[in-house]
Structures are given as structure tokens and as C-alpha cells.
Image (cartoon, rainbow, N blue to C red; front, top):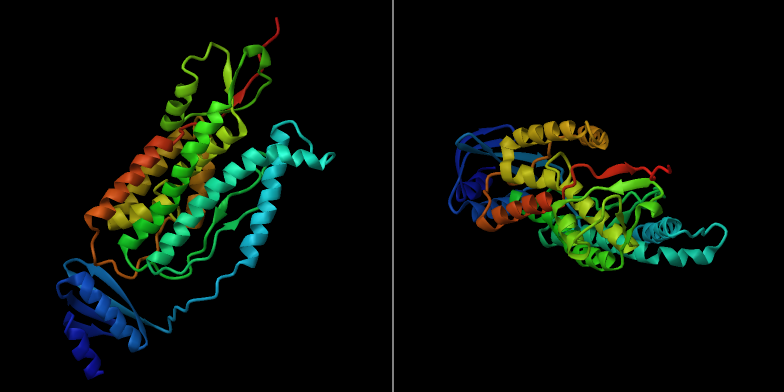
Length: 352
């Protein structure tokens, strides 16, 4: 034990030692010395958490935590991807007037929507996956949810983080990688889709669900439809609809709540003040829910998943300029893609 404390004191100024807790100060440069301390404790069979408490640094030791690299499982992700291709093809075909149940060849009609949506969702999750691996975080390949939702044919995709995030810097990088990648893929898909969308007259409106517009989607729409006559509307091409969904998913994931991507970024950036940010966001959503009650579901979901964010291994090392810029970029993406009232009912014109 004395030898261990001697090695630790080279990088950490020890003040007090309690059971599984060492109090003091990490010597400068802190980031580099914390890396040395991690190796020392790993060799001794401990997993250390580095915590800031007032002006002091704490090292909490946990034993029995072993992080092993596991063999990548390709079978389940590929099966779920295949099933999700089928469900999105099916729903995409129905939206274009096909009926794969009576005519299986009608699945071809769903290709533009299915391909576009899965490219966006897959890109989002792969952005998380590769960034996680680059930052030393164990994660699964993207897992799609082939639930035949009547609007989009799936409930999205996710990756499972299987190890503790090492730093708040890594948390921001992993958190923004998915939304940013999905956003960059959604832009050209949306533009191509809007190019093939068409304006429909009041007599062609048959009712259904209308889509709200974010700042960015409205800007892109105005490039192709500068003036929309009163009573008319734009019938989105399947690729444009997939692009709209991609931007919508980007904004939803960037909500600064709980276990969402935005929640990870907000925790890393604001740290102990994150509860204030979460409170403001919940209040805004509750107000917006007066007009679109779907926001109440999102608030409830975030509460059920938990608003409290698990700690990173190193909460002492602060953020550098690059990570702060990434956090501000996440805020910009959220503002550009957020749709206050995503869906509304479209009533067919009255016949006089």
C-alpha cells in the first residue's frame, strides 16, 4: 500500500485518505497526470472516478470494474436492419398508393423513402459509434427498431454504450457526432426531395396530417416554392419527407434532457448547472404542448428514462476551446432544426 501511495503522490497531492476515497489535488498538468493515475489504479485492480468537490479533487475507487473489449456482434444488427428495410419499404409504398399485401412488387414504390430514411438514421448512429470507439468508449453497432409505425415504418435506431465515458470532452464529441452526421446527410436528401415535390391546389387537398417547418426546412422549401397560393400546399416527395424526418430527429435528439444526445452535451458543458437548463427546457415544452400535446409525451419519456446524468470517469479536467465550439454548434443545429409544432391536421376544403 505504501508503494502505491508513493506512486500516486507523484501525480496527486494527497491530503486525506478515507475508505475508497482519496482527497487532495491533482498536480499540473491535470489531464496528463490523471491519465497516469488511471494506469496506476488499473494495475492495482481499481477503477477510479475523478470528482471536483469545491476547490478539492477527489478520487473515488471502485473495485471489480473490468472493461473488456468484446467481439463485435454483426448478426443481430444485420437482422434488425433487414427487418427495418422491409417495414420502411412497406410504409413508404403505402404512402405512394401501393399495397404490398396484395401486390408485393409495390414494395419498389417505397425505395426512395426507405433508402433515404435509413441512410439518415444509420449515419446518425454510425457517427456515434465511430466517435465512441475513437474516444475509447465501448459501444454496439447500430440497432434498428423494425416497428411498423404507420407514419415512418420504424421507431428509429440506437447504439448501446457499454463502458463509462472517460471525460466530459469525450461526452460532447460522442454526443454531437450522431446529430451532426445525420444532419449533414439529411440536407442533400431534403434538397433532392424538394426538387421533386409538387404544389397541389385546394381542390387536390384530401386532408390528413400536415408538417410544421423548422427554420432550416422553411429556408430550403423557399428555394423551390417561393410563393404558395392561399389554400394550396406542397406535397412532399418521399425523399423530402425522409429529410424532414431527419431534421426532426436531429432536433429531438438535441433536446438538453436526460439521456438524449443534447442531454449528454448539456451535462458536459454546464455540469452541475445542467438542472437549470433542463428545467427551462421542460417549461418551454410544456408551454408548446398546449398547441401540440405530443410534447407532453416527450417530457414524460425523458422523466421515465431519468433526467439525472451518470458521471464521466474524469470530471476534473475542463473543456477546451474545441469542445466548447462543438457544444455551441449543437445549439445552432438545434435552433435550425427545431419544429415547435411538428404536426397538425389538414382538413379538406368544404364544398359549397
